[in-house]
Image (cartoon, rainbow, N blue to C red):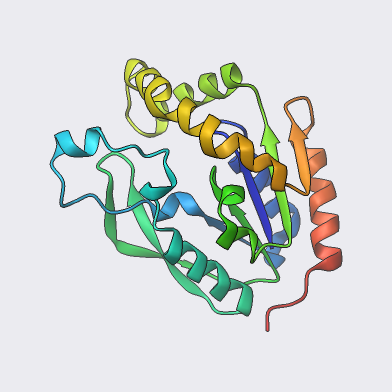
Length: 202
């Protein structure tokens, strides 16, 4: 099992997708971004001030239980989260257990319960300016945000939480990937490593 972490906009999903392409039917994808807490009980104004960059915004216990289930060979139904409304859908996403689980998320390496069930920990270390540029582009296009709101959130919570939780977690990584490294080459190396050492599900 491989956990890919790093700051917002570092390239976690890009690396995960490239790795999964190489793993083929031996790999399955699992992201903690599906596990944000449902805020349907809050008003729009209350949802707008939630710190989504703090680990408490995530249902970590459920994520870890599902991760452990996948590792043990059990398929799961992962939650589906709507980032536009900050609510969890009634639908679920079936995730199949396969020999290699590729998990991703900004807080993965900061969570001892996640580290305990992962074999290889990767941290992508990219400077803040480049990550912000990518975050703006993603949130405007994919999540219906305005550039001003993305930058305001970055300054209010994303950057401070990165400094407090995310960047320090790089110390736990087995492998640190720099901004100058080719993610396709990293994916090639990771696939060879994981396919060579990962046991089949029980």
